[in-house]
Image (cartoon, rainbow, N blue to C red):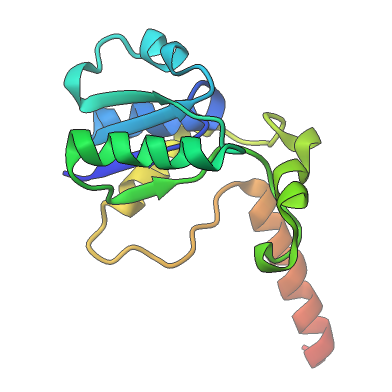
Length: 157
């Protein structure tokens, strides 16, 4: 089994990923600003769950959380960066503040079923040859269909 490191684990999608990974038999390092809330929501997790306080805007705190993961489990196999929010640009081109503050209005309002998506992510990450990209949800499917329609029009098909 693998060791998962999941940021933003106190609720929503992050919590569902932690839950699905634990149910699949993986060990999980679950981080959140208040890590106690994660343990409180998963009381049966036992030794497979390490909860670590983490504010992803604190670089020293990130290192401390990673060190705790390595001390406990010896490695991290799967990293799920769920804390924070989206950035509609290349990270390399944005400054730290832009990366931290991007799209905060979208937090916890995305469409879909977080538990179903979390299970799909755990299943795919456990595959012998997982895909490089994983698109989930009807919103992304619609975006792909729109893009394909655009290509078809350009090609005259």
